[in-house]
Length: 114
Length: 114
Image 1: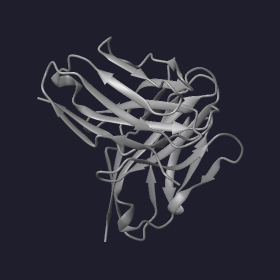
Image 2: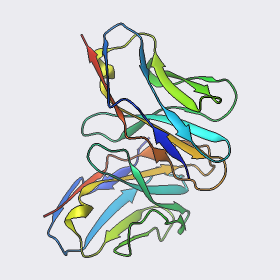
Image 3: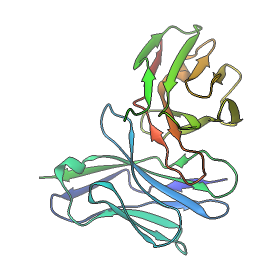
């Protein structure tokens, strides 16, 4: 079975400060890890993914994520937060064997204060 | 190019009625997924199509739920004898074949069962 934990329901950060949204996972085999963002009344938008290679992955809108195999984590980061980054963020995983469907975490709401 | 589209955007029905939800994937995407998202939770997998066939339907909650993709493009999720607990956002996603490809999501259909 595969699972994702996002331990924080909400993260608050001031505009211009760095942000981190945490994610840990459990999966059989090698993990494929994804981050998605959901704005109100809109679908999930793909931000970035880790498949293999460099542990630091860069994605859309200045976001990046760091894969840590020993800690089974894939935290989302951004050096300088914008008010427009305020949204719901989901981490998702699937293994390189078995089911093709993604398993999502419960989401973390990011609030960036001006 | 055009993204994943879903119709209707909202569907209100009465308990016991039959509903159909439609998904138009991105052209050329052979993989298609249905997920269900309840308020405050991450999406949960329902069914996965590779081409015309359902490759994994392990997420369907019971036999009231059924999905088809007869020509390998448009898919319809069908729910018989709807119950109030079926109320949720139903999301469709498509991707290129290959385990590591990201899924692109549609805006969803919000189903409300009265």
